[in-house]
Image (cartoon, rainbow, N blue to C red):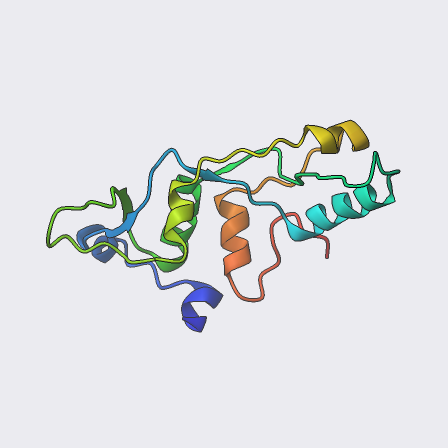
Amino acid sequence: LDVVRGRGLPDHEPLRRAAPPVRVAGEPDAHLNLMPVDDAAELIVKLVEAPPSGLVDTYHVVHERDVAVTELRQAFERLFRIRSELVDRRAPAGAPVLPMAGFAPYLRHRRRYDDSRVRQVLGSRPAPRVVDADYLLAGLRAGAPAVGAAP
């Protein structure tokens, strides 16, 4: 896995196209809110430094753009040089589906978090780093800096 994570597999496109796709239980319209940790930490520090509105303040620190599960799938396809497809959990009998018990629920995720309190306290924020397939792929490769990360 370290070899794959570090450089990806050699690209044997004809073999990849001929191989059956890796079937993963999920939904193509699902999405996740992924945010670079240093961006989240910066916002959290600013919120801690803001005057409290009462005894308890609750904030949802989120990226302004959700990442589609299809973008996650594309990053894994590029990293592992495979084809994949999202399938319903109830795949036909005998059809192999990749069991990802711990991560599978996220591949059906459609939750949105209300960050209006963060915006109310901090006002407008600079445009965040884009979290897309390229960013995810850079983060999955060992030793590779994330796209847009400070040196």
